[in-house]
Length: 210
Image (cartoon, rainbow, N blue to C red):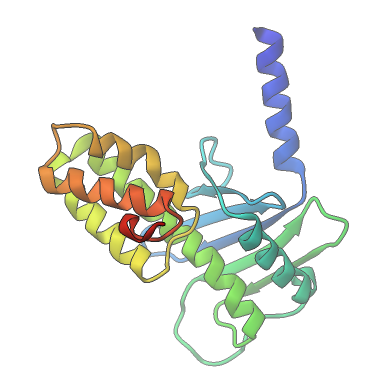
């Protein structure tokens, strides 16, 4: 058992040391004031709200989404291309993009960018952040605030309708837990079941499936 555990830990460490894109946003006064995300070449996302946090929120995006993001990183010269616009705009948090564990090296920081590829890759990481926020809010409500579960689901559903969420499968364990547990409000159970069906059906209403 000890050998298996050691091998598992070694494998995870190797994965963390492989090529990945690092993103962070520091914005004092916001909630949270700091986030960091790593994305590897297989689509594995690790989300943290503190540097070197030992228990990150883990999810996974599709191969197609992963390819799009890595292609943007390459177009941005692996973040050697400056992204800061230099315009006198309000502070929106210092963003950092960096490539780690890769043959290429690059890092860039910016508050606001007008670069089209820069805006696209930034939006991807903002969507990952929003996705983590809604997962945390739902898990907190499920565990500690049963009456608040329906509100958390409504907010998550609204974000999903605006295409602000990624890696939707990450929500299924909590959605199934709510849908199958009579201790939650009936409307919450129905909503959780409907969202879970929507995710499992590839983003289409169940009735629309052939």
